[in-house]
Each structure stands twice: as C-alpha cells, then as structure tokens.
Image 1 (cartoon, rainbow, N blue to C red):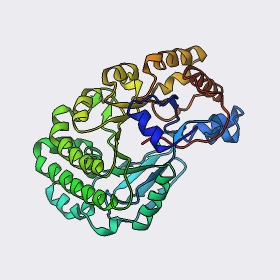
Image 2: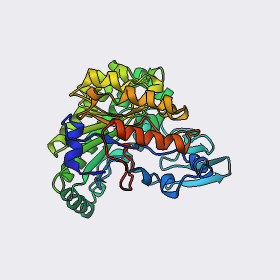
Image 3: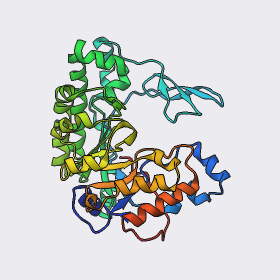
Length: 371
C-alpha cells in the first residue's frame, strides 16, 4: 500500500493509524538476482514489485547541505573482480564486486587542521546550494501527499569520510578543536539552507546517516555524543522543526544501543535498521523507548536463510501484538543476503502480512525505505 505523508508521520509518532507498515527497507544484494532467476523467480519478484510492500510517497528537498568539492568522479580501473575510482572528494577508492556494494577509500583528504582549512570551503554556505524551482516542485508534491525530506551530513560519518575512522577517533582526543570546527561549519550551512527552504516548502523529516557501530558497539560513546553530536544535531534540528519537521531519523548499522539515550537528548525520534546480529532487539527496544523512538527494520535477515520454522519463530517473536499500533515500521534489518531462496522470501512476506493483519497481496509496488 502507498502511504501518504500524514499517515506515515502519525504512525512514526506512535499513533494507531489502523494498519501496520510492512516494508522492504533496502532490497536485495545485487548478486542475489542470479540465484533467484535460477530458482524461477519472476521479473517482478526480482524487481521487488511483486510483494505489495508498504512505502511512503517522498521527495528530497532540492537543496545541498553537504560537501561541494567541484571534483569530478572517475573510474581508474574496472575489472570483473574490482573497480578502482576517484570519488567526489578526490579519494582513490576500491570496490570488491563479489562481496561489497560500497567502495572503500584507500586514503583521505584530511590528516590535520591545516588540511581541513584547505577544504573547509567545501562545506561553507552559498546561495547556489538552493534550487528554488526544485523547491516549488517539492511544495507541489507535498500538497499531493509526498513526505518532504532534507539530509544533513553525519556528525560521525562526514568527518570519517574526511579522516577515516581511526584518525577521527584519535582526533577527538588530540585535535577536538578541528572536529568542532568541522561540525560548526556544517551546522551553520545546514541552518542557512533550511532557512531558505522554509520560504518555499515545509520540511517533514530531517535525516542523517552515521553507520558508526559494529557488533561490539559504537565507535563513539555517550560522552562523545554529548560533546560533538549534541551541539550540531540540536542546532540543525531546531531549524528543521522551525521549518515544520516532525521526524528526525538516523541510519546507523551495528549495535547502537549504548548511545540511544544520548541520541534522544540530541533530538532523534526515528532509528534504523536495528540489526539483530549486532544485538539490537527491536522488541526490547520498543518496550524501553515506546513513545520516544520509532524503530524501522529489526527483523533478522539471516533468519530467511533457515527453514520455514526458523522464519516463523523470528516473526512470531518480533511481530507481537503489544508492539503494534504505531512506532515500528517492520522490515528486514538490511539488504536481503545471498542464500535466501525465493521460496523462503515469499513465505516471509506472506507470513508477515498474516501476523500483521494485512490483506493478501493485491497490487504491485516497492520503493526503498532506508531513510
């Protein structure tokens, strides 16, 4: 079913809209297509449109809050096994095609404050960050029920793109003034962009990508969240709320539970994808944060590699009646992994619809909900 912005916002803010939302957040790993074709999957199943997924109509705000480097990306070497490229930050990256969908940098543009000051202009505000004609189109779409979203650079993720994970974590102790200057610059630009945007269209959701955790926990703890995230997030979120936003959503893989309380203080009210393999239990999290933090995802993607009983056990546990009524958007915790048969996936979809009291599949459609 296609959801409009009002119903989606209400559901995310713990209102009972009379229906649960069952989504495919990310879609399959690219190499799963060959497996499904060999198993007799239809073209619509491979395109994910055969399963009548719930999704919200949405439009991204046509304004740039991130790095504007002026560097053109280019492919340096492309083989069946890997691709080496130069990205928009001037980094040489390598993508291993058989096991990854995201290329990894082989070096970074910032190693010290002097390096940062040389590229600081990438993040500074200018009026040409705003596409006014695009904003008018966004306003028209919002009037038709589309959710309007604007992104902000991640407080961890963007400095990580500039320094790398290890160097960023060290810099928090050895050069905190550099990290503060980065985030202050990004915050000022985000606020100025949002102030221009609100003259043309109301913002519904502020979104941020962090990906700052693994199975053992996040790379920043509560102290770093409060020192670095808090002034940045709260400044941008205040501007977004003034422009109409009601949802502040973060995407971060891994075990983020140790910092969820701190992130709530920063204004966050939506979180995904809640990976069970990293210890994120959407049942326990919902009961702890009911009314405060909406969770998306949470269903163990690896359970779909098991038999039907394994899938049923996972869904029976996750889709409990007391978790329904708003505040959870049900879906797999990340991309559908290789080794999941099309027969298992069909079973998962139909059983999930049954447990959530959704009607049988009657229509087609899918849109990525990873925001």
